[in-house]
Image 1 (cartoon, rainbow, N blue to C red):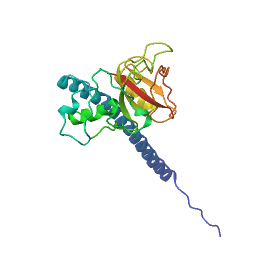
Image 2 (image 1 turned 90 degrees about the vertical axis):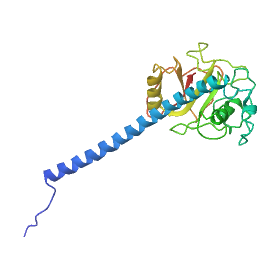
Image 3 (image 1 turned 60 degrees about the vertical axis):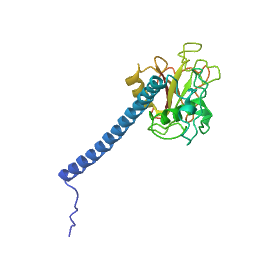
Image 4 (image 1 turned 45 degrees about the vertical axis):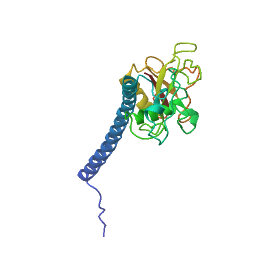
Length: 229
């Protein structure tokens, strides 16, 4: 007696392939939607902090962090006690506070405390916020030195940022490119938004650093983006 073997029909195989295709399409579409949401979130960080800065200037005629009247204005707010700046027009310190925890003793950290006490930014204290990919968001003047010099130059010894900038770190290449393209010119070493490729999280943006010549989307490259106010 012969035994008849059973198998899938072509119709059954086609149905399974269609289901697999739909599942893969849904997953890929979902991942793209998550990426787009992160891009919008990063752009909102830049725009929101810029709006808060200009609102603070309009209200108090001072720069947050550098505001010399912060202590007298918010003397009743003691968590933490506000620390006044020296009013020299420079926000001293770096956007990442050199990798250390932020305190109100540093103007680039006090920046956040002043904005929060004024009600322009949510939260409490001087710690920098984080972006949608857990990178630090912070401010500094030029290269962050005591006497600020240029940083993120377009070429060696070329033009760089010397004024107040806001930086957002740990941005995957796809997000960094989209943010620069939508907010500026899409060029990593030109315009008001410039990029530095990272070799470690939340890197320093220091003296004489040349901005990355061009973006390379490999799926593994990570950038810190800085924008001039």
